[in-house]
Amino acid sequence: MKLIIFKLKLIITVLFPIVILSGCGDSPEDIYKKMSNAKDKNEIRKLNEEFKKSVEVGNGNFKECGSGCEGESTHIIVKKLKNGNGKFPINGKVFFNGVQKHGADMSLSNVVYDKKTKTTAVTIGSTIKKLSQEELSVSSFDVSGYFIEYHMMNHDVRGLVTNVKIDTKKLKEIKNAKLEKEKKEAAKMKMTIAQFRDYNSKIKLCKNDWKKCVDNGMLINHYSGISKAKAYCQVEANSRAKFGKPDWNWVTFGTYFVGNNYVKTGVIKIQDNRVKFQNGFGAMKKSSVTCQFDLKNKSIVSLYIR
Image (cartoon, rainbow, N blue to C red; front, side):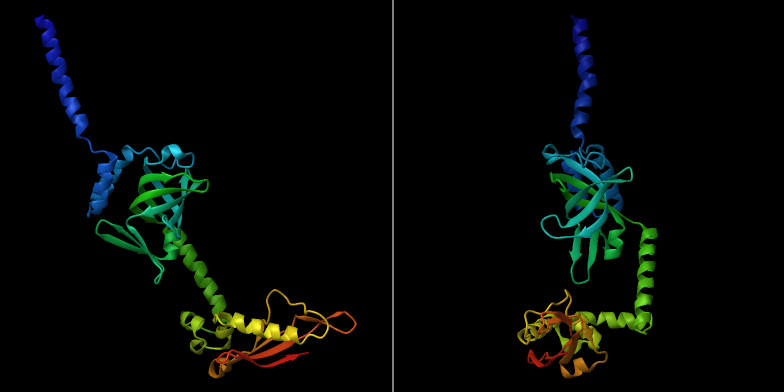
């Protein structure tokens, strides 16, 4: 009897501390809350390592996850990031062993997109990193959180970013390609790179106010009211057709005259040299329509068909 009691005491002595210790560990929910509230970057990374030990969903099984994964703790590394809309506005791709597996639509508590500056701010602890659209496209987000809902194309995930990595090599390649493109476009317009960039910076103002356009080309190509002017001219030309409806190309009135007189006077002169009008014999003949349109009064000044 004494031997049995001794054995029971021994079992209790050995197991009881184990039971206590096993009950002391933080749950994934507890760790996630700590990560959300932590202000130190290194502390967040340590907590993330703890969180990853107990996650149910990762890059390896993300694609295969169905409705059974909803609510499960998740840790994924996401690339090819871009901003979208809706409840899960950050979109990206989940890779495994270098192969793209599935899309992820994410609601990330520490990520904010600024439409005005077109930058994405990621706050990790007390550190805020602002990413341009170029940087975002070549970055990878270390995301910890929860699998919310299964979808055929992109699963929904709610969480936070614990680390950001920018592929500097790819970023350099993108910037170099952009610079080369700028050089070619600047050369076509007989401008330096600085002049070309200054010119482009004024396009935003031109879009809604033709008086703020720099020249005829900017007004015709970027002012939002040009499509209506072209439509007015096309309707007027149609009304003057004597033998049936003219045959227009998809893009109408693609010719304009260089200079800055359109901006100065508010009267544009546009031309369509590809339209076809039917003659008295029923044949479609290539013609030319020249239209002068007053942007101030939104009316046609003159229209010629040749």
